[in-house]
Amino acid sequence: MAEPIPAERLTRIAGKDITGAGAGAGAGAGAETKTGIASTNLAAMSFAEMAFADIVRRHQSAVFSIALHFLADRSAAEEVAQDVFLQLHANLSTLKSEDHMKFWLRKVTAHRCIDYRRRRKPEQISLDDAPEPVATAQATLSDPFLSRRLRQYVASLPEKPRLVVILRYQEDMRPEDIAEVLAIPVTTVKSYLQRSLAMLREKVNRAIGEVIL
Image 1 (cartoon, one colour):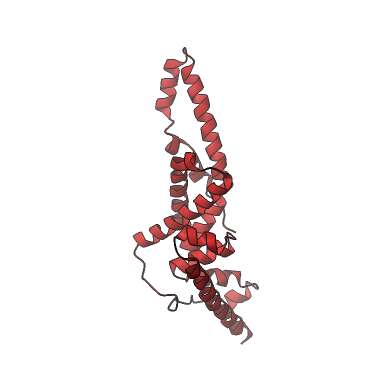
Image 2: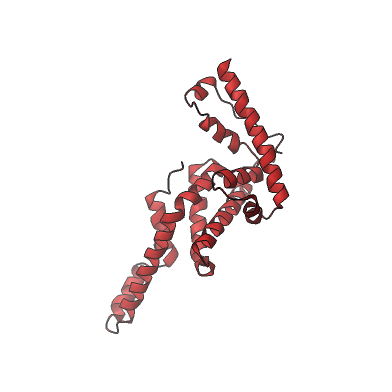
């Protein structure tokens, strides 16, 4: 299971970097306390900050986990997660329910992952040509359920099939919802799942064979 975003990043996401509250705001408050307006504004701002910080804490693990499984890079996943929550703060008023927020976070995280990877211009490969990671029999023996090897295999999938597998089996999303998140036909989602699972199954069976041999 992916670890949550480090505390210092969480503070930066849910605190001053988003709200703009800082020393200047405090100075202005001191000048206006006689009217009572500043203290009311600060109380409202404090409540808003606490409410958003709670939202971040509730959803940070899911957002970070999607990014980490897709990018296979902790610092990159943290950067994507921070961008997602910054965008969430800007769009919070448009979200109508907790379920809407969860869907929105998955959708934005998926697209931010793709954007992040494409900015770094990786080598384009097809699903059929996805590379098989190098692994040893000892590595497999140290992990009886092959979970580590399976994570490597999922990470080797091209970006769209990889996101489909992550959203389906990590986030337990229906193919119809995945299709909406990724803006692709449901038939394409099901095709990605079928082909990806067949390839993953073949590679896992091959890994088990290596250990037996």
